[in-house]
Image (cartoon, rainbow, N blue to C red; front, side):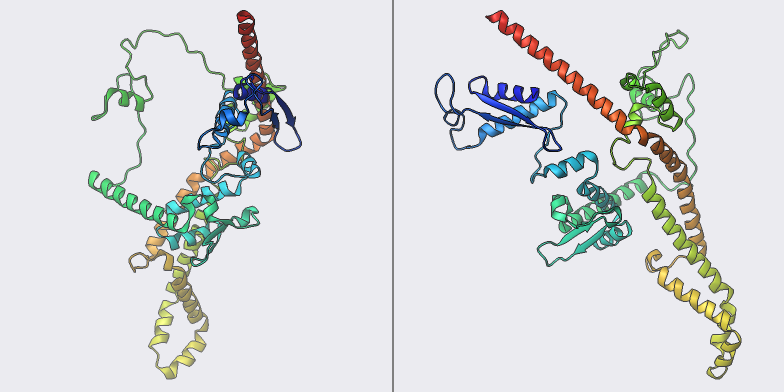
Length: 434
């Protein structure tokens, strides 16, 4: 009501009568406004005064501008026009983190970055759980769906935005590949090949030596020190007051208990808790990466086992192939298990090693074993961080809605207070003038 009243006051400037009604029949609170078309003071119509010239809807543009200003003052969201608009439902889903389009955009953008061509992009979509329908000769060329996450209908690529059409996706992949190629050449040129050594920890002393090529500000910024070194390191300083990372919710009911539960679960601040308010992908959530790594590890592990199996029976299979056609039948009958095992392993290897072929050359068993070791190390490196995320998530879920509601109520109370202060100030100015 207050916001609607302020909108009418600023837009109509007291020259037109109006009726304001606040409706709660929808999920979103909204206002309906009806105003008299005739000016109270000069008798002219609103249309005559404000809608002259070729721009027939300029008064609506002004109304939207004032509405956006008021919403920003009260901390409410403002929808930025970007081409084709979205429905109220889609907007609400975006705010709640449940929009299929937002989820598709995020996943598709990630797949585009790791794709080498448009065909590779389509293949990776399937691997990452994105179903697609691509018919280049149809009016609707490309559609996507996240069936594993419960999306029922396909979403047309052109409704996701201009960057998600087949042509634009192919262009982006080409641009990314060119940029990566240039980066690789630059790195090779700038840094000659050296044996890989594990990164050494940075050890800071009371009198650090500046790195060559860095400015004084950059050097101390890297060390986490002030931009200007202390002139007198022995001079004592008063201890700085520690920031209260939970200050905004200290006034909540049972705040101490809630904070203790959150901290025991690894949530160390309100900012940390905010990252669990909505259903967006968390930076420490490695579910997809771990699943992909696990799939690769299983595939390479099976290949190595098949190579070992083929190697174990290669001698007998060689004898079998060297036998004459007359002797082969009886030889195979005596050594059926070994020959079948060899052929089974050989067939599996031929079918499953194709994705790992580079420049027409298949990797050796030793190379696969090294690849497997690297993948396991990468997997094991992500597991502790992911487990910590799961622990945080379990601690956060019981309190996210309660804390979010409390913070929203606090903001609303502050906005109401500011509104009352502005009204009081306006009334004082009006009384003074009278």
